[in-house]
Image (cartoon, rainbow, N blue to C red; front, side):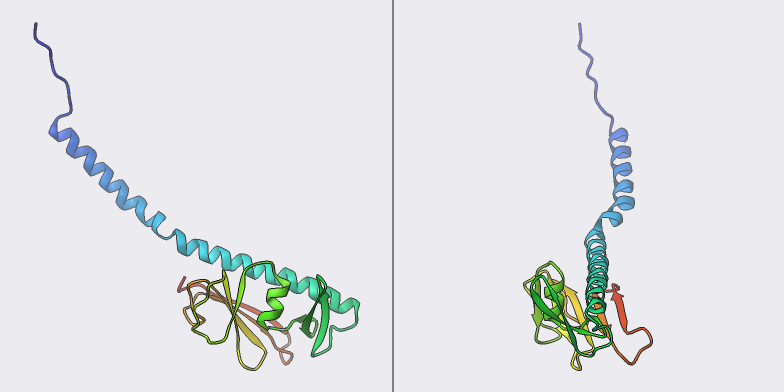
Length: 164
């Protein structure tokens, strides 16, 4: 009596390898870009949090009659926050007080940061950039927050995500 050996032929193994290669080529690009998608989602979430904080600050400014003052001030969690026309003045210290996250105020636009978010105050006091860790202000991965009393709509948010 002879035992019959069973196994895969060389052709079957080659076909399986080819199928796995095709799947890897199709599926890999979807997983490679996850970091970029996560950064963009975090920036969108931060923008939403900043808008919510501004709504709260503006409500407090209206209640105290400061919605037309430039500058003004409201209290959040026992801390004074400066306002412009009732909205958070775009300064790193204000945003750090208004939002609950790990922030670091940058002294230069290209400073390396160790916190989750970097806050860069644009000279002139009307704008600031918020950048994720590992990025600089001009890396095309940031949130621009602007309050300008000369505009019809004084508060402006602009996401730049092409470099994330």
